[in-house]
Amino acid sequence: MFNILCIDPAKLDKHLKLLKPLLRPRFPERPSPEGRGGRPRKWERWVVIALALIGGSLPLSWRNYTQELKGCENIIKKWGATGLPGKTSLFNAWKEISELQLINQITLLGRKICPQPQSVAMDSTGFILKGGTIWRILKWSKSLLKKTSRLFWKVHLIVETRKQAILSIALSPSKTHDVKRSGALLHRLGKRLLTHVKWVYADKAYQDDKLFNYFEQESIKLVVEPKRNAVDHGTTSFRDRSLRFFCQAKGLWKYTYRIGRKASVEHVIGLVKLHTQPMRARKPCSRRKSLLLQFLVYNFSLYLKTLYSPS
Image 1 (tube, rainbow, N blue to C red):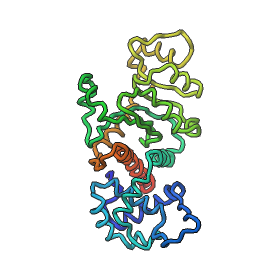
Image 2 (cartoon, rainbow, N blue to C red):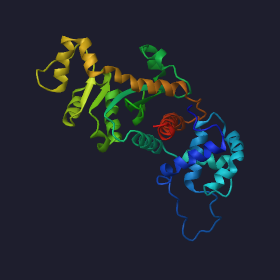
Image 3 (cartoon, rainbow, N blue to C red):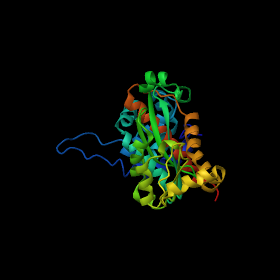
Image 4 (cartoon, rainbow, N blue to C red):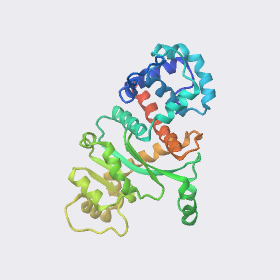
């Protein structure tokens, strides 16, 4: 489900057709240095970048991936290439892609899937950099977490609650508090999408005065279950009114504000973790890119469903 393709000519042709408008504007051709000759390029830059992204999402070595592409040579030539790229060219293209470019592609696909999101959910989770994840086991063990926290990398997400598309994503070390990365999430969400958002659902980690005040200014309701030590300031703000409502009728508060929508971001995290491919990279920066690629594949799979599902 989460592999962009099983090396198949028909699927490869369809996916390259969709990747071209996404990658070509952001990976333009580099001008040749003046006064230097050389052989003409065998393929456009976006083609080799697309093939590198596809190869990075598959559980294959670059050598085996290059061998599998030989059956799709005619399809690749159809998109402007005069020959198949070698494993070195594909690996160099993968190294060329930055973390920020992967994040931009994830958010771009999210905007195409949900151009006008009404309600979103916000949360974070941890991934171990050496492939696989034992975050749930170590989450509550403070002594063990202190020793192994450097192995984890934290992923912060904003997900649309209905279609469950990833609208914003950010990375941080595992010890970073969720609220500290909320600013980066909202910045990448963008003002244009934020004008459509009416409800934001999150857990108790996002119960912060500055965050509540920011959403209050933007006319957005931040729905967070109050903590036990929450203080009612007696104002007419949504936070204080929600706290008084929660203290009077907890069950009715959950039903009225539909707190269950927060589970949409947890559902996305669970799906990505369930289908995460083993990370072949050795360097931490390459591992973070491989981790971001899993979320890119998720959004791309969802984008395929929205395009080809019957209306």
